[in-house]
Amino acid sequence: MHNSLNLFLTNYDQWETLANRGLRAEMMLAKNGQLLTPALQYGVVGLNETAFYRVSIEIQRIDDKIYDFGQIDGKWVWWHKSNATTVETAQVVQHKDGPQLGSYWLKNGLDFSWLKLTNKRHFVTNRHAFVEPRQQYRPIVRIEDVSNLDIQFIYSNQDQVFITVTAFVSDQFLELKDMWIKSRKKAGGPKKRSSGREGGTVGKKQ
Image (cartoon, rainbow, N blue to C red; front, side):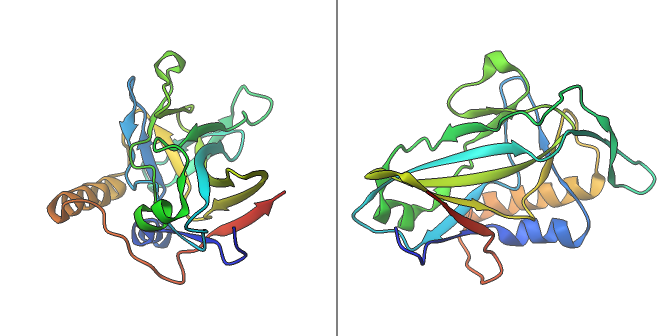
């Protein structure tokens, strides 16, 4: 991989809208899991087209707090600490397409729109991530060069934080969510976009 490797959110406008309005994305938990909106979709540049890469995502809990929604101010606030003494190790989910050439990822992006969240451990499959309700999580994307597994590139974005819920509570978020889903269906699927502000944090772990 090259030093020019970079990842970006292909639906950055949606996450930016939430951040600008002081809203937190709410991701629904269901027994069998539910698809996420905004989706977890990324573009990538700087890969070697002829090298094979393995891609995975972690849904990482960012603190030990449980949150409650304030009906008056419409904001999520810290309610109390969870029973866990430490933040649980994030679950790693491998991309369903398996190891692919760099040219494949460059063309198709790193699309995790198929990923579902569940709070039922016995329903977890290779397309699910286990999470707890009313807690904050952030996705972290990892890219590994199959020919050199000692090197990993890691990406996260500070705007891409969400709350897990068993029922949607923010009317403002629901309005945006419904609008994005309708727009995506009308367009026949998500469209990629590129902006210099989409980049998050890309790190190299060796």
